[in-house]
Length: 151
Length: 33
Image (cartoon, rainbow over all chains, first blue to last red; front, side, top):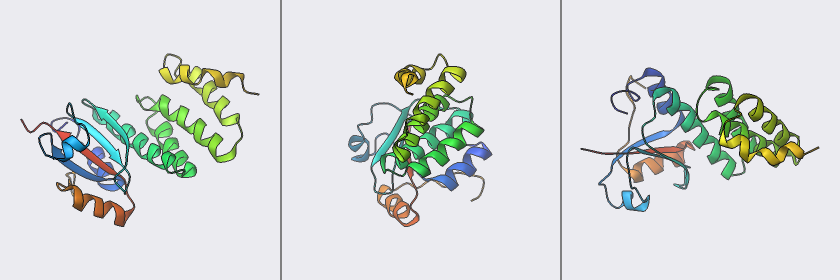
């Protein structure tokens, strides 16, 4: 991460703007125990009260780090019932990082947010249709499979 | 902003900043070697 991902200007600008970034060595106690750290690099997205909403383990190249952290931010909004804010972040992933590993999950979560925001099932069906058309091999397409039966 | 990531190194300080700014926190646990 230090050699490839963190020096990239786009990554620097994004992290400094979107989050409060904290670096902790793996042997720092008690924090590593508090987060049940078993392997590095491990990236954890927390809300402003310190509650965890996403973690990833392993190297992320620059083109994957930003959409991965954006997905964590979207999950933070989702978990806090801020569905409109979550959708805005997810739309950013889908417009700017559609080829990233985070994109299929972003489609899925956007559909769920749309449903939770309106209680209209249409966003769920649209999410399945987009996943099937754009990311047919993704696990998230399988997760969305039941939504194909919605009216 | 500068051209480097403005990493915090203390969790309590980070949490206070996050609460003030209403921003999420990203923790990078790394292997110090």
